[in-house]
Every structure is written in structure tokens, then in C-alpha cells.
Figure (cartoon, rainbow, N blue to C red):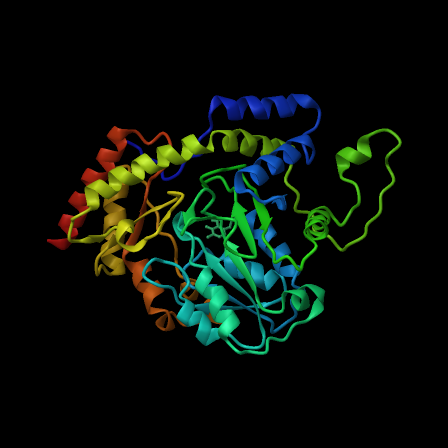
Length: 402
Ligand SMILES: Cc1ncc(COP(=O)(O)O)c(C=O)c1O
């Protein structure tokens, strides 16, 4: 029987060469490779202020720490996301306020409007599956809200409104209405976790796109210092003879990306257009197959005016209940096909339930969850594998429906 994994990393010879060269160079933690990766990312994104970090989660915590959150400060997050989106808020000292999403999986501006209070310090959109949330209406509703937001600390006061933040864990390379991921929110955070489109095994990057009132260079410097203990010199700089003295100027975290991981990302970034085109080809094949089948809603039906990064192919099964969806996942597993469900809505998870969130208050997120399956999509999934996946999905769906 065939074995089709869900999302193995794409490791080309150039990744292996770049990592080997780093291993042999005598320097494996933060140094020249991270610098090169940061510069390459900045060039690709068209934004100078990029801060590589060791995960999306750590980057998001640091971003929210920049806002100097205090207990009871609120950050609005969508119900349909990975838990890290809300956990980052808790770790930064704030309180997640969870709101429902729309049929395209992204945060619902109307729900944000209802959840805004003077204590709202940030609003986080999630670029689900590589489809960017729509940030424009979020800026607009904040502006029009008439709420006198409580602003504490220098950065909040300079901003004068809640921070608009993008959980861009999935969306590097995507665009919506002609604007690229990374440029839609005040601050975006990418993930380079092992299953992501572009990986460093574990890693991420914070990308600043703040209003002009901010001193961009100074803010960039603050973020960089905060990734490395607030220390004025990194380990490489200190290791140069006679340069051992350093100062600690901020209460920093230790969330720097090491060179050996940046090497993977650097090689992947050089071939990212090719990676995206391979993903797109599979996505298109799936679309061509599912288009017109009455039992599914395709991404084409819900993702308009943009180009996703093809991170997920969310198969939406019309009006399916959880038990029917689970039967299909089981039948695919029996055929050696690994699938997945993105995501279990936050209010269905114990931690958030215990905080008082009830899934009944999130009908759209819950319906999406009960009726979706993420299909394998990655470079290296052959045409034959794709046909095998499609054939067995159709058979499983027809069986469940009969
Ligand atoms: C939407 C979303 N946000 C955040 C994360 C966390 O990313 P990381 O593992 O890099 O911290 C993930 C990872 O799965 C994710 O899917």
C-alpha cells in the first residue's frame, strides 16, 4: 500500500550544502547566516525591519511585550487558529478575547467591532492556510469605533490605537488585493516551523510595518536586542579577540535563531518561487478535481481577490458533521494517506474552556471545524500520489453519504 505523509519538509541539495557549509564553518549559532537570511527576507518582502527568531510563538510574545501589556489588557484573536495565537497573548501578560470567524476561515470584522473595549490593546488576524485575513476593514473599524482606548506606555501612546497584528505563520509569499503578506498589518510574524512552506526546522520572523511616527531603526534595534538577552553584542562579536566586554541594556528574552537553522531557510528562500509553484500545481489539480462536486466548497468559492501561499488545501465537506468527517479521515488513513484538521477551534480546547469560552458562541468556527480536512500538499507529492489521494477521497465521501 502507498504511504503518503501529510507534510514532509522539502530538503533540496542546496539546503544540505548550505547546512554542511555552516557546520564546517566553525560558527553555528547566530552570526553570518542569520544576517544573510535576514537580508534575503527583507529583500523578498520589501521591508527593511525584519527580526529572525526561533519560532512564531516567541516572535509573537515579543511583539506583544513591546506593547507592555498588563493584566486585563485585551487582545482580540480568532477562534479558528492554532493555540499559539492565544497562548502568546497570555505569555505576554494579556488576556485573549476570542471572536468568531467568517466562512473564508478569517477573523470576522463584525465580531471584532462587538469585542472592542477601551482595554483592547491589539487585534490579531490569522492568515489561515496561507490566505491573508482582510486587515483593511480592521484598521477602518478601529478608526471609526469612537472608543477612547486606554493607552499605556510609550509605544501604545505613539500608536494611539490598538496594534493590528498578523499571524502570518502560513502566508509568506501570499497577497491580497495586491498587497503582500508582511505589509498588511502593523507587525506580522511568520513561522518557519518544519511543516511550513519555508522552513528552518523551528524558527520565525517578526516584520515591522509601523506608522511613520515610529523611529523604524530604533524599533528594529529594540526588537533585535530583545531576542538576545538585551545584550549589546552577540556571541560572534564577543568571540573576536579583545571584544569580550558587553552590556545588558534591556530585560531581553533568548529567542535568537541559530546560523545552522538560518542556513536551511536561506537555501529555501533562494528557491522559494519554485517551492510555491510546485505547491500551486497541486492546489490547482485539487481545485480542478473538486470544482463542480456538489458535496464540497472549494477555496476558489471563498478566497477572492488574492493569491494564497498554498500552505493548506482545506477540503470543505458541505454540511458534514464531525463524525462523518472523522470517518473520512479514518478511511484515508486505512489507504495510507495522512490528512489533518486545521484547526480545533480554541473554545473546544480545555484551557480556553476553563477560561470560560464556550464553543456554542462560535458557530462558524465550529461548523468549519466539523466539516474540514486538510489534504497533503507539498513539493514532492507526485501526480500519481495526487490522483491516489483524490480517488480515495471521493470514494470515502460517497461511502459516507450513501
Ligand atoms: C496559525 C499558526 N499560528 C502560530 C503557529 C505557531 O508557530 P511556531 O510553531 O513557529 O511557534 C502555528 C504553527 O503551527 C500556526 O499554524
